[in-house]
Every structure is written in structure tokens, then in C-alpha cells.
Image (tube, rainbow, N blue to C red; front, side, top):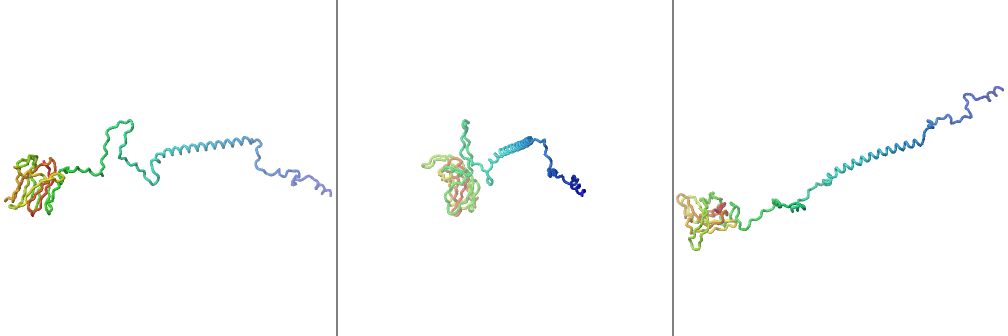
Length: 273
């Protein structure tokens, strides 16, 4: 009995818990806080770091804004010179009215505008002669179309050939009643064909200018020598006809009738001497 009492009232052994110990004293609560740390100093450091980051961001934003503005300024002129997508810019139409000289600038003689290629050429005054070598109107010479030629080239009319071989400027004689001396032109005509061919309708006339005005014949002039009534044996005949002359350089046309069964001859491309 004495042994049990000693055991029950004895000091606690190594395996017995201390009834007076704090049950939370042995628990692990993480790293212990530094008792020397200053909470106010830590808060100031964090504030300074935030200010530095904000300043850096502001500097980057300022640089980016400057680059954007410079790029926009560089592109502005090019953008102004182009139209919106899908359209082509066109230059304004040139005004036909000359621009007045600037104020204070000396005014020189106006430069004439270049003629419009599409505008029709001005019409020649009525009665003006056509250009040399142009056709001169002649009246109808029968139901058959006339044979035509130019200058001194031979013109065939059936079996005959007609050539105007000469134009000479002269002063006509005043041999007949009412005639007066004036400037004239002598027209020489040569006809070739079979010898003995009858020229039963031989007649020569001259027309001048754009209106084909007939020239007045000077039949009494001593140089006048009409074609014969028939070709001689060698088949060559010449006739000389004197007319009042138009102004020098006026286009002329000479018409020749030879036979009723042969076409008339019209010679263009002649010019009054």
C-alpha cells in the first residue's frame, strides 16, 4: 500500500505533460517579426517606388505622344494632295480667260492664245479667189461629163488631144466700137488628132476666181487667131485667144469645145500672169 501512494503523488516523469504549460507555446506561427522594423519607414519606401514608376510611365507617354504628332505632321501634306480611296484627283480646268497681272507687276503685251485645232477655219470673203491650183467653177458644157486636166498637161477628148500651151499677159488693143485698152491675157491652145478631123464646134472660153467669172474676150485684138474649122494634114492646130485679164495671181480655168460628138475639155490649175 505504501508503494502505490508514492507513485501517485510523485513528480511528473519525462513523458507526463506539464499541467501549467501554455498549450500554444510549442505551436509554429511562421517567421517571427523583426521587433526592430519601423512601419513608417517601410510605407515611405513603397510610396517612393510608386512615384518613380509613375514618373517613368509619364516620360514614356510623352515620348510616344511627340512621335505620333511628328508622324501626323509629316503625313498631312501627302494626305491633302490625295482624294479619298476610290477617286482620282483631277486638276482644275484651265480657264480660257487670261489671268490679270498681279498688282504692281509690269504689264507686257498679251500673248495670243494658240488656235483651237478643232475650230473651223474662217471662211474666205465672198468673191475671194481660191488658192492657186484650186478648181474654178465653170458652167455646164453639155450632157456628157467634160474631160478635165491641169496646167499644161494634154487632155484627151475622144480622138483629139487638147493642151493649153501658153498664158501671156498683154495690153489688149481697142479696135472695135466701144472697146478700150486694158490689161489682158493671151491663151494659146493646141489640138492634135487625125489630119482632116472637123472642128465644127471649136470655141474657147476662160473663167476666173472662186465665182468662175467669165473673162471678156477681145476678139478684135490683132493677136486673136481662133482654131481652124478642121485639123491640117499633120493633125496639129493652134489657136490664140485674147481676154481681159483679172488681177495677177487669180486662178483661171479654160474650157475648149471642139466637136458636137466629143466631150468638152476643162483645164484647171492655171494662174493669171
